[in-house]
Length: 564
Image 1 (spheres, rainbow, N blue to C red):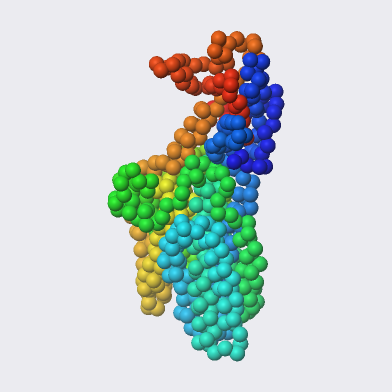
Image 2 (cartoon, rainbow, N blue to C red):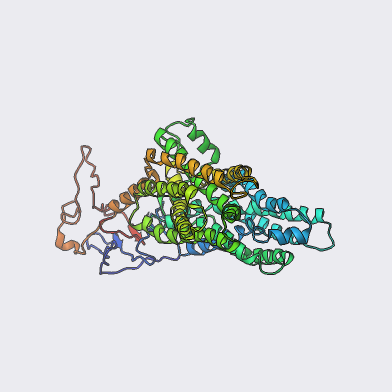
């Protein structure tokens, strides 16, 4: 049924860029009306075409839905951003106040570190469960679970700040609160590409994926800024209040629009299990989850590159003080190194994501082949750059790493969806591998820390070598990526078919065009008789009904873009 917020509008003047058919009524065919409607939404949307045949019982025939955009998609996007910001705060929350937390709660520094490590550990299995829940219950129900876990985590963590509790009991509640927050965090990261696919068209999908992807690291940065305000116990209360205040953003999120924005958005979500089967070649070519051999290779390479860059960035964020302080840099400078990486990456993502939607629409693979070698070279250069009195050089390297690594986030997430046609399943695998690499780097580099007898003591030179070599070796595999954007090509092909099926007719009276003895227009309609006497339609033609038929054809909110 046609959306109720769009009513047919009759006009006699065509509008530029839109399909406009004037109301024409022939004296020979008083029962035939071709009604024109004007698009009331944006010009980039295609709502749907309805062809209704009204019989003696006044019943409407089948209606064919096509594609359409809704303004409320931005409300849902805003909800994802807010929730992504807050769910990103708990992970690094205790990093800047580790000493204060250790003193106030009477726990060790290692125990404080595990308040952040537990989130990375829980993230891995939960991220793989999110696509299963989304396939069965939809985006909104998954968001419900994420918000509930966010609220529970905030107040369970605050319960651990009660002064009457023993150190063991307080730490258990803090740890449990972090555990619940680890369940909420992957929900809004993994579902980001799926939400953009369900609600945005080809000219906004990459940008939507980008803003959702970078919301989490921005939240982590805000957490590091807010946690030092006040005592450690007060900061836990602040986190609980912020978590509660953002919870109503859940009501901005909806599972799916009444009409999809693209062909990909109209398809039923595939399961993570089908993606895993496709990755090992256990799916038939006729199955929607099927992936060609080169697509499987591309997705594997992109997963490894995404994982190693995300893991390296996470390790740098957590171990920044341990990286730079042995070389003579203070806490403030070490923190600014990490902040520079994050802020430059966010700025680069904001600038480049719209370009991928409007200009570089078919060049994600080429962009990846440019950014990854630059990021790998920058990581490798830290082996020689991290030394005393080289502040400017390190800041420059942090900018290069941030722009190349964080800008790659939405590109890799979009390419994963392009190659697999499974937006939430591919995002789950990418984020899962990224956190797994983060845990590996943190544990391995902690073990590679030099002893107190080294020069300088406790330096992380071996860790920089591990970082650089790992990123360089895996990053070099990017040149084997073909990065065919199969999902976008299918969306464009389906949209082109819809455009070519629409008709542009000049408003010429029927009596001036002439008609055959059978009532067939000579000038406005092109037809050719078949062998059986039938008259098939040709491109840019509208078939007229028999004289006895009472037919009404309405085009509701259809927009044709010239040269598209």
